[in-house]
Image 1 (spheres, rainbow, N blue to C red):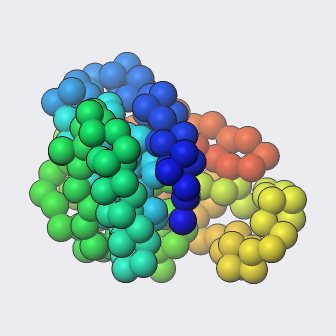
Image 2: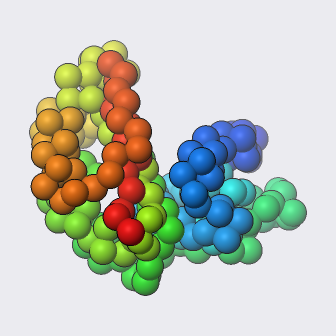
Image 3: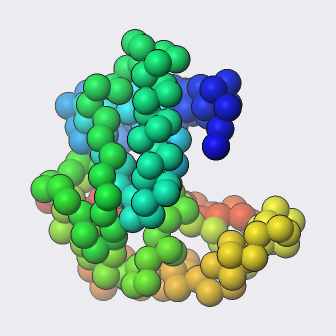
Length: 201
């Protein structure tokens, strides 16, 4: 659980402005766009994203994390009553295969897709719910990352997750090619790889 100061610091409106910038550069009118943060966890990224889009949804399958995300929203509304976008931010229980929404302009998957038992079926569902021309932002741990040894020494669950990645750079390239998805950005670091994909018009 974050302290009030850490909550505000971690949801600073500048923190995820790059998502809005990339979206705008690729033809999305963010002030009129909907964004889905899928696998939103405690809602910190979702809260930060709510500054930049017309309506933002966070979907999380884990009840405890969903409760924490809703509590974080309540805390922010008390600490910062004029928080931009807070009135149009919603958290729902759902999963990669059960998205309780219709069509969305942007979907963000920040270190969440590998928690899906079938990431490619999950991506099929994401693209089904995406409007034509919509964007998908994906950030996942690099499969050969030192991340697990250097940063996650005390986290057996995360180490196991990294050891059993179903989604690799090679496999996602194959998925993109098979499904004729446009790649806007394809970047990698020693820790993670990052993609922006566009649904065909």
